Length: 106
Image (cartoon, rainbow, N blue to C red; front, side, top):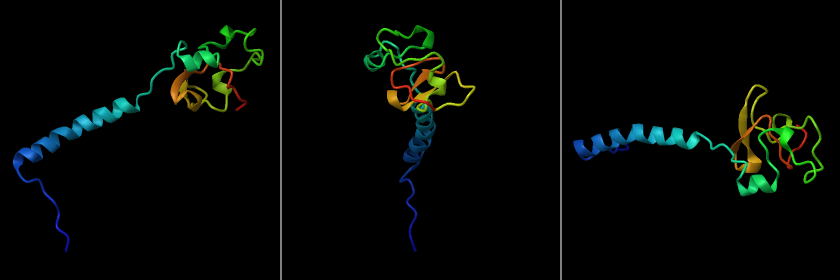
């Protein structure tokens, strides 16, 4: 028969019980994703803009009107999401109206 480990004393139990809510809060913060900064070096190298109307078409000739993050295969959101994670940028949040040179038909 296995023995269940129990806290050695009341102080240890209270310490563990007090840590649980903090761990939950920390998990929630970790789950909250960062918004991709267009000035981020990776974002700049891929020409990421928060509004596809701002694409530098001289630099990124592959851009075609109508391409946005929302209709890119990498966009991890739904049709109504203003922002969603993108694995190209480490799952940071990109705007649905945005664009980058890693755009691929979704």
